[in-house]
Each structure stands twice: as C-alpha cells, then as structure tokens.
Amino acid sequence: MPYVVTRSCCNDASCVVACPVNCIHPAPGDPGFAEAEMLHVDPAACVDCGACVTACPVGAIVPHTKLQPHELPFLEINAAYYRSNPHADRTPLALVPRQRRLLDPAPVRVAVVGAGPAGLYVADELLKHPEVSVDVYDRLPTPYGLLRAGVAPDHQDTKRAEQLFRAVEDQPGFRYRLGVEVGEDVTLQELTRHHHAVVYAVGASADRPLDVPGEDLPGSLSATELVGWYNGHPDHRNLDVRLDHERVVVVGNGNVALDVARILTADPARLASTDIADHALAALAASRVREVVVLGRRGPAQAAFTLPELVGLAALRDVVNVLVEATPEDLAGDDPRLSALAELARRPVDPALRTMVLRFGAAPVEVLGPERVTGLRVARTELVPDEHGVLRARLTDRVERLDAGMVLRSVGYRGVPVRDLPHDPDTGTVRNAGGRVRPGVYVAGWAKRGPTGFIGSNKTCARETVGSLLDDLDAGLLGRGPRDPRPLEDLLRSRGVPVVDLAGWRAVDEEERRRGASAGRPRRKIVDIAELERVAARDRRAGRYAGGSTR
Image (tube, rainbow, N blue to C red; front, side):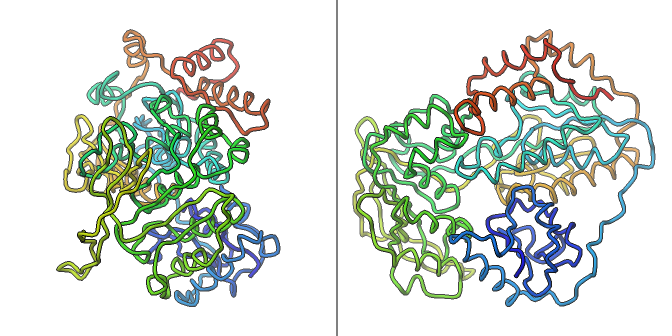
C-alpha cells in the first residue's frame, strides 16, 4: 500500500479529485460519503503518484514507508475498508463536472453571515462565478470559527485547513466585514437592501443540557466552553476553570469529550509548543488534576468517538494511562473501534502518569455541591431496545458518588433560533429546502443540517445551498439591479461598529504569529476583543495590506 490516510479527514475531498485512478473512497456520490469519518486509499489500485498528498490540506496522507509506529494501525484500517466495500467499477481518471455559468452576466453581490468553515466554503462556491462578489460578516474580529476555536491545540495538522480559507480570501470579489453582529449591528432587511442574496452559516451555538439537579452549579460547564477557553475564544477567556481537584468528569463520549480529556491530562510541556491560549497553558501547568473520567450512557459499541481519535489516543502510551471500564464481552465484535478499545484495556498502568478512564454504561443523575461542584451521582444503566429495535440506555437503581472538582457536559449541540429566520424546534435548524429559506435568503452548515459532519462536510453542503441560490438568480427571482455596499458601510460607521476587513485580519494574523515565533510556537492568540480591534486598526491605517476587492 503506497499511501495511507492516517487520521480523521477534513472531508474536503480534494484528494479524490486529484487521484488519477479513482482509488480514494468513499468519494462524493458514494454511499456513506457524507457520514464518513475518514477516507481510505485502496492498496490494490494506488499507483504511488503522490497526487493525493499534494492535494490534502491537512497532511493526513502519508507514504506507507514513512508511517510512525502509532500510525501503523491505519494500514489495516485502509485495507479492511476495501475488503468490506469493494469498488471494482473504476473510472480511469477523476471526472470534474463542467463549471456552471449564470444566464445573466450582470454583477451579483452576496452577503455571507458567518466566517467559519461553512461560510467560507459558501464564499468559495460563489466566487467560482466571475459575476459574484461576496461580503463575509462575523460578529468576532477573527474568522475561521471552529477551525480556530474548536480544534484541539495538539491537532495542529488539522488547523492546516486554514490554508484553504486563505486561498478563498485572496480571490477577487472577496471581502471581510468582521466584528459585525447581524441582527444587532445590522438587520437582515438592511443587508438585503445592499445585497442580492444573504446566506446564513452561523452554526449550532448551544450545548445540550444534562437535565439533572445541580447542573447550574459553578464548576459545571459545557465542554464547548472549555474548548473555547483553551483555544482563546474571546467569549470564554474569563471562564471559571478551577483545576484544584484530582478528578474531572466529562459526560459524553464523542470526539469533543476525548479532546477535553486529552488536554486536561496532557503534559503541559508538550502543549507549550502549540497555539493553546496563554491563560489556559498557565492554568494547566499548575493543575492538580490526576484523573479524568469520561462517562458514556451506553456501551462501547454505541460510543460516538471515531476510530482515528481512538488510534490517536493509543499513541499516547507514555503520556497518559487509558483505563477502559468494560467487560471482554462488551469489547468483542467486528467494529475496529472495539478492537482499539480492547488493546487499550490490556495495557498496564503507570502510576506516574495521569489517567483517563473510559467508563461505559453510566449516566449522571445529580451534580453535587453546596456552592460549587464537589462531585457527581452516577447511575449504572442497562441497554433495552426501543420500538424500532435501537438500544437505549435505561437507568438502574445502582448509584454511586464520584468526587470531582469539575463536571463537563459533552452530549451534543442544538441550534438556537436565528433572528428573522424560521426555526424548527424539533431539529434545532432553520427551516429550509436545499438551503433555501426563501428566494434571497439561504442557510448552510449546522444551521441548515444540524450538528453533523466534519470540517470538509461543509463543502458539499455549501455546493447545494449555492446551487439553490443560482437557480433563483437564473429564474429571475432575486432581481439584478446594482447593489452598492458603501451606504451600508457608512451606516455601520455611524453606529460605531469597528469593522475589521481583510487587511485588519491579516494584521492580527501576522501579529499573533510574530508573538508565537518569539516563544517557539505557531502563534500566540490575542483573546481580548478590544486588543484585536486595535491591532487590526493600527496596521490598516499604516496601509500595509490591501483591504479586499470592492468589485
């Protein structure tokens, strides 16, 4: 096998298009592509050309001769996929469909609300059309959303995807309007007066609650808040994180739960070479935490974390103990995740290391503490099938207390209503059909489809939404009269909104990298909104960068 995919993919699928022999699957159009946690290189069909390596934005594809010891399990993972999912009917070359063109060449201006991956993929799709200009709005002075504030700092390779978005920013017709909160600083009605269409890509901003007594005690936090805290998100820089107890409990067993458990048990010296926020690095260096318990309501076979995350966890052999509280019967089966957990369960414990405990069949029933968290009451669960045959966790009367100084919930996200858009309370999404809310207003990303998929999943999602927008343009539903953004800029200025453009963001980016270089780190993030605005305005006044096209 010449090349191997070695981690969770961004699902951008650039490698699929680059491959001359169509040996990377599942590809767009294949069953399961949208839900796939990673792609796979067929060992029988790969011709060792290296095109996929060049195309991969996050460096996830490696020649088999350069695999590190902890990456060797991916050899079998890739091969096993093709044993179960043969792709015999191959097209000799990857086919790229002809680029669509608008019927009317008149200029079009589109506002994209949200500068995270979903919004920037929408901008990329729109800018394939020379008639289109895009203004990207975000309430923060910095772009990239969860790529900047959600990816764990010890996963720096995943953050290479920002190179994709930097290329989008460099396209003619792209502009940032950062630091602008749509719905507060400017209304949807005002945006539609100055743009032919508006696309919302605002994500799913709320965590699901545990719905147990004591959940609101100080020390009971969402994992998303903690992720924002250690990643330098301005909203969470002052989060009350106390690491003065030996145990932390994380409720939920998806990838985010593993991320926070891994960071809380990591060696701070290793984190010091990442872009982790300074305040978090200092707190983790002084941490007294020795054990992080990760609770899952159901069994190992129903856990939400992905195989690449487990393989990465297994690579931390000399960094953290990983205890798997499950019977051998629970870890038996064909699921490769169970094999990875069984291998972890067999490892000896090093008392000198911090410990991560993966506990299954347990659920919280009460967060304990008179004034702040002191522990958690946990009930054992049993699995029972529902009317559709799906195994559900049911509480039993076997209850125990876990002492802990902090409880983190990581049980999923839910969308909150977006001002001026129709909300579906059952799905937590904006009501839409193929991304169309109504002609002229569209939605993409988690706000459209719910909190599912990976970074690159937004590419396929964006393509569908932009297709709906282009259909409406060609049908004459949006009007093609000229749109001038300057009155809107004057309006924002009159309201005292400190808008950050592309020049301002590039100035912030350069300053963060300069500060990081002096400390041997990729960047040191600026986490204060006022300081971000000062850095952006200072270097913009100096005229060091172009502010983006005004086409």
